[in-house]
Amino acid sequence: MKSCLIVDDSKVIRMVASKIMNELEFKPIEAADGQEALDACLKALPDAVLLDWNMPVMSGIEFLRALRKLPGGDQPVVVFCTTENDITHIQEAMEAGANEYIMKPFDSEIIQAKFAQVGLL
Amino acid sequence: MKPADFEFMAAMLKSESGLVIGTDKIYLLESRLMPVARKKGMKDLEDLIANLRSRRDPRLLKDVTEAMTTNESFFFRDIKPFDLFRDVILPQMIEARAAKKSLRIWCAAASSGQEPYSLAMIVKEASARMAGWRIEIVGTDISTEMLEKAKAGIYSQFEVQRGLPIQMLVKYFKKDEESWRIDPALRAMVQFREFNLLRDLKALGQFDVVFCRNVLIYFDQATKGQVLEGISRQMPSDGVLFLGGAETVLGISDRFKPLPGYRGVYGLSDGPGAAPAAGAPPGPAAPTAGTRPLPGKPAFPTKR
Image (tube, rainbow over all chains, first blue to last red):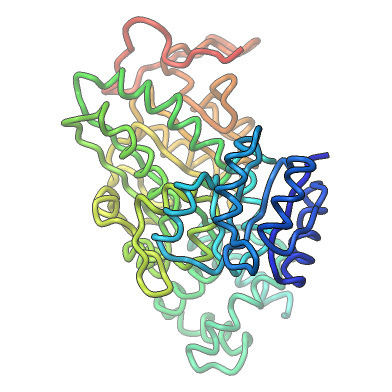
């Protein structure tokens, strides 16, 4: 079973996303900020990361840059999932190595469509 | 809804748009037509139906037909047909029409425009190989309302996230308050026209590629056959037809044959590389006026 690391400081969002991941037959792993996510990645790299932008301790973009520098860190498929919905943020994310980008609010259909596009499904 | 009212509505929708609805779709009739009734200041569906029966007001008739036939659409719907268009059909067309340098594509149920714009993006990405070409993408739909939306080229955040890769969003859309507006150059690549598929397709001219996806499913067998026949007449011998995932020509029309290895993609039965179906009588394969055989290799290599 593929794994998906869900990184969001909102417990509700993590819960909703975990439920969607279960439906898509991904094993969900939760992290409340970028640092927790990075620690999780050091233990085991997930297949996918669903990543919020604004979080305490370490932001999503900082996490992504750190992840891509890890050995094998180019492997996980990273999908941003954030309320930041302007072109500047999207471009910054893509340049930092994001594979896809979801603008909140999202639903399971959008996640499914985006995961399919990046070849996760 | 009274059975007689349902029968009246079903017959009317069939003759107006080809749409076939069974009694299992009564809920759809109710949920989609209540807003129409309200908009027209009528108190309920019975009122609306009585009105249709007595006056046959063409405006009301049109509103009712549109409400029943409009459907959701999204960019690169189902992905696969668009991959096939980009990777197989378009390269073949570029080669086969190298001298003519022209390509006409028809989206037969353009709805709110996502399908023709998806094709426009693919063609645009291939523009380096098509310098100096005359490319026309025509999107038609029965619904004026949908076409207005398509022409505006403005989509909600939800709509641009369903099927559209983020790189394409960044490249071909501009954010406009809470919506996303399509690039004017892409917009200019597509012409939108109101058109009822039950009419004579000749008015639209010839098309090299036809996308007629998720339309036939709403028609009965005879209407499906009639539309497919019509499409076949508007194609050159190497024309290509894309149908929806749940649609087929098998048992409906012998004008088209599936292209082996490419699901949902069809060529003309008397087109290039056509092999007589096993056990089929050697029918008179009368070439249509204007068709020409392609020299060299068969146009559609079989995927193994």
